[in-house]
Length: 96
Image (spheres, rainbow, N blue to C red):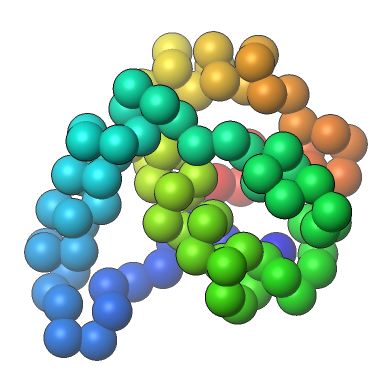
């Protein structure tokens, strides 16, 4: 499974990339967090190639991962209560 830690695209500085991610969190994800990957795409197990390229990787890095990176600890704890990870996904919250 891909990690939510991906660097900036070519031609974008690390500072600008970080600012863009923070803005996405503030403008989109803070009030309406993304569904966890196991609910958004339940047909894919965490070790599926889907999470390493294309739509799956983009979802993990651009939405779900951004939420986990910038949300407060209290918000993440509340999120985990609403969306408990299935056994095959348990390590995801700890690793990301």
